[in-house]
Every structure is written in C-alpha cells, then in structure tokens.
Image (cartoon, rainbow, N blue to C red; front, side, top):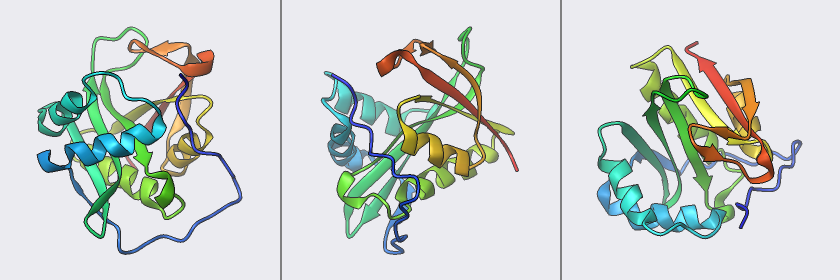
Length: 172
C-alpha cells in the first residue's frame, strides 16, 4: 500500500498556530506518535517499539508538536553511516502532521527544531524523501535543503513510485 502523502497545493498558505508547542518527545508520547504516523497509512508490525527506541535511543532525537495536550505532529533525526548510496551524517525523517492540523506551520517548526539540534553537532543535515511527496520536498527546500541525487533506494529505503530524493542542507 502506498503512503498517504498530503495533497500539495503550492499556493495555499495556512496560518501559523502560536498555541502549538514543539518539544522533545517523551516515552509517554509513543502511542500518540504512532497514531499520527498511522495517518500516512498502515503501520508495520513493531512500529510502537521502534518509536520507543527512537525516543530513548542515543543515535536519534525525536520532537513532537503538541496542541492543547495532544500530539499533532512528530519528526526525528538519526545518524546514518556506512551506506554506499547515502553520505554519513544526521538525517531528518518522518515529518508527519495529523491531517486535521496541517497548514499551521507545524511541519516547518518541527524541522526547524531538529535543524537547531543538528547545527550544534554538525555543519550538514540530510534527508531522503519520496519524489512524490511534494509538501515535504517544498518544506525542506524552504529550510535550505537542496537536491543532491535521485534514486530508487537510499540506505535500504525503497520508494513508492520508484524514486527518492537525497537532500542536503548546510549550516547557515
């Protein structure tokens, strides 16, 4: 089954919601993160355990967007190394906002929080995105990411439709 990418409407802009708080994910957020992740499509077996490992793992950093006590978005960064088709470094992944809360600047703020965290550790950030995911590509470009390569797989990740995009951002 293909992932449910948001409909990309290039000229549609929402209104940022100042009530949304971006913070580090906590173990108690795991089920809510999995609920938001499920808005992309069916979750693979063991997803909740992976989310818990990402929250508590030394090689990952996960942030959440919270509105009125409810997790409405999430994303993470992790380090990759040793892949012939993907440079070593920090990768932003899984930027997901509950469909009922999109167009409020939440995805942008999640990525901003991760980049702030990455810039304290590295001069470069990476991401791989499905070429069909227009909203995520636009979001990353607004945050300074540029396309480096395309391919059917990066670091063992296969892309629906057969094409992924490797993006890089350099610390401003």
